[in-house]
Structure formats: structure tokens, C-alpha cells
Length: 434
Image (cartoon, rainbow, N blue to C red; front, side, top):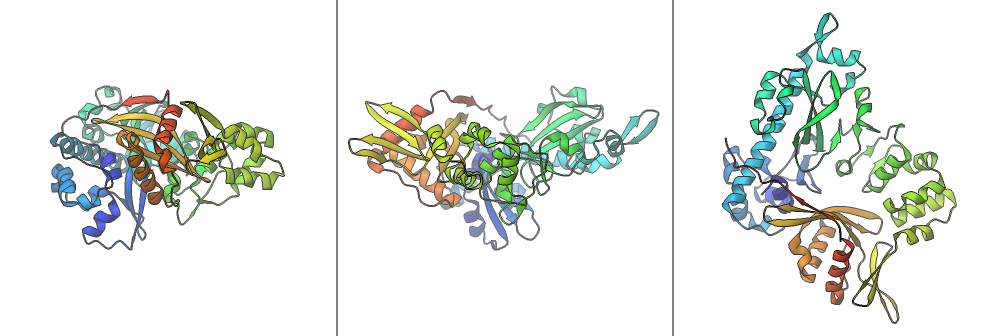
């Protein structure tokens, strides 16, 4: 089992409470793919499940959770020795890569580089090239000690970087928690190689600085790039947007914002950068409440066009089903009968250990929830209803409605609409070594 999977299956608030730790100073956040985190309200430090156990427990952590914290597990976990070894290996890998970045960031201020006939520091070299803010935005230097600290299995194809004045660029899934590291030469930063990737990329730069339009902006500005995981960390503050963001980028941000506040009127920015006619081509990203907001601002009748763009019709065993207004319906002799108060879009299915995980987005009302659910959830109407209910409650979006007598048809509808999705097989982790 991977650490992300454990963090997603184990209810961290319950574990912390069971350990007798005061939770009043903690803000618990569940991020799609990466699972539960706890952010200290006073210090801003972000921790996850392994943070609450001693290093000596890591090798047997899977068994400890399975045995002593079974009442804190949200989704089924079956004990297996290979799963325990895989988890331990992944914990070591994540801790090692975080340590590698910390060393690289510590080493960059004094790192040396040649500029013409002079020897200067890497920060001064980057500043002279117009890239001086990369250091404050998280760049690290690959010194000899840093390169030697990287697991050999990750550097087999990267020996060209050893001793070649190279740097590391991290991306984040939570403040201070990396999910990728890219390596590049200082004299050719356009060419990057992945050194480490934990399931998916995150944002680049400083999460609490203005959102910029591209990674190139981070060379000259303090800021961060947009990522759907960013709003999870803005519950009590507003996101600042740079003026360089394009209309399309602003629409993406607005559609993924999770009800956070912005320091600037994002709707006004969108309307200034994208004409009303062009908005129609981006309807698939927006919810009905957002369309209604645009109607009020522009005076244009957009809701009917939006509904037409979102309507999808399917036929199963002669029965006609309809997706409309983020709900599923079935056509009957008396009209439309509502099946749900949500719709689901499946983006891919990935193989994890001996199971398959469905990755997608749930839309309900004006909100969207990224999710990962095991294949088992989609095998019966009962398990599906339980999984959806837990997803609604965990994300604070109310109570789901599922027309229970038609739950089986609903599953068939979701499967039909998901035909053609990518099946992604994940590599098997190597056995842990100390």
C-alpha cells in the first residue's frame, strides 16, 4: 500500500483524538489523491498520519493501524505483509525526498557558479539572468552531498546532472509537503527531468503568494502557479490573483475554487478578458450558480444555453436516461423522474496493488469534488450509496439523494458514460531497505 492510499483510508481526526492529542489547534483537511492532513492554526505546520507515530513504528505502521486503530478506518483494509513492506518503502522514500530538498535549499545560498571570468554564487548568477526569485520560490542546489543522498534507483538515468551545477524545482500538494521534484541544469533550465513524482504534480512556488500565469513568472515574481489542490488551504484567507492570468486560466480557477475568497473580483476579471460570446465555449467548466452570476453581470440569457451544453442522453435496455443540471433523470410515461442530486465524471481508472481505483469528479449543485474510490464501490448499489454518502459528508456538501430502487440502473449509466477512460497501471514499489 502507498502512503497516499493509507492517508486517504484512515480518518486522521479520529486517530489524533484516540492518541489523546488536543485537536483544537488543528485544522483537518482531506485532499483528493493525497488524503488527510492536519494544519496547526498557530504555526501553519502541516502534518499527516506518520507524523503522529515514532520513526521506530514505521516498519510496522500498516499492522499497527489495522490492529489498534480499526475504528478509525473509513475504507476496508486487509492486512498483508507485502502491503506493510510497500507502505514502509513509500514512507522512507517520501521522507528521503523531503530531506533531499531541504539540503538542496540549505546549500543554494553558498553554491558557486562561473559567470564570464568571475566566480559568483548561484543566487547572484540567477539574478543576473533575470531569474532571481526562483530561490525564494523554493529552488534548491544539487551539491555532491545532495546527489549522493538521492536513492540510487532514482538517479540511474540522471548521472549527467552530478557535478553539473544543477538545481531542484519542487511542487506541492500541501504547504511544505512536496509531491514532485524536477531536476535541471542552471545553464539550461528549459530542459527538465522528473526526479520524483508522488502520483501527480502540484503547485510551484509559495502557496500564500499571488497566483501567477506560468512557472516562468516565478523567475521574477514571488508567487505560485494554480493547482486544484491550492484552495483546500485557503479556508480563512483570500487568494490573490496576478493580472497576468489569462481569461481561460481565470475560468479554470473559478471552476475549481471550492468557495474560497479572492482578493480581486474574479468574475469582473473574466468578463474583461473573455467576451460573452466566447464564454459559451467554456460552459463545460462552470456550474449553474456560476452561469446565473454571469447572467446577472452581463444581462445575457445564458442558463438555457448552458443546460443545452450539459444535457447528455443515454439509452439502456430501451429506457432513456438524462444528465441535466448536475442530476441524473430517467424518462417515464409521466415525465422525468430524478435519480440523484449529483453527477459523476470518471477521468481514469488506475491499478493500485491488487485493486482498481476510479478517479473522477462529482458535481452537485454549484460544487465539484475530486475523488478516488475503489472498484468495489461501483460493484453494487448499496456500496455505491454508502461511498457517495461518505463523500458528501466528508466534504460538507450536504446529503446525497439516490433513487434507491433504481440504484443498479444508475451504476449502469455511470459505467456507460465512462467508456473509453484510460486504465493506468502503477509500478510496484520495491521492497523497503534502510
